[in-house]
Image 1 (tube, rainbow, N blue to C red):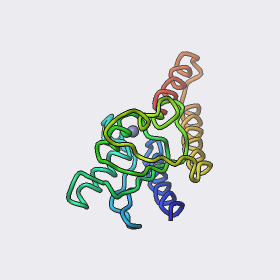
Image 2 (image 1 turned 60 degrees about the vertical axis):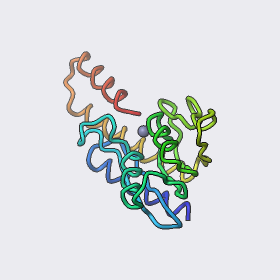
Image 3 (image 1 turned 90 degrees about the vertical axis):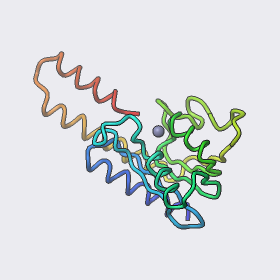
Image 4 (image 1 turned 120 degrees about the horizontal axis):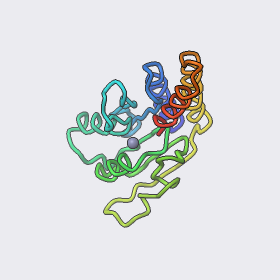
Length: 172
Ligand SMILES: [Zn+2]
């Protein structure tokens, strides 16, 4: 069941990649049924808030008609950032399963473990489900992006270093 749901999240991550977004996908389930789906849409949505988890949480709240997702499981391909970990606490989600670790923004163990702090809700976390696939979809995306930028960039070394900086900047 967990693996099947993570595959659904991976599918959403691939959809994001196809639209030029950093590939992160998320599904929320209740009793084995998907009640919310989300994928990263920061570029298309022109919003710093358009993370996969927030989209999935918003959809799940709408589907279930309330803000307390207290019997749900959230599956996400990449370790949640502090904003999304905060939203998970606020939505009272009891169980979080994520694939790849995020050394740059991960807030469920990598940089900080927000869920171990004395907030009023402590989700249980499982890390590493389909980690290889979840990491591969991200590294493939950045590899393709670097390749496209290399092809586009001029021989001017300043432009090339700017392109490299951009590529690093959008990784989260
Ligand atoms: Zn996030």
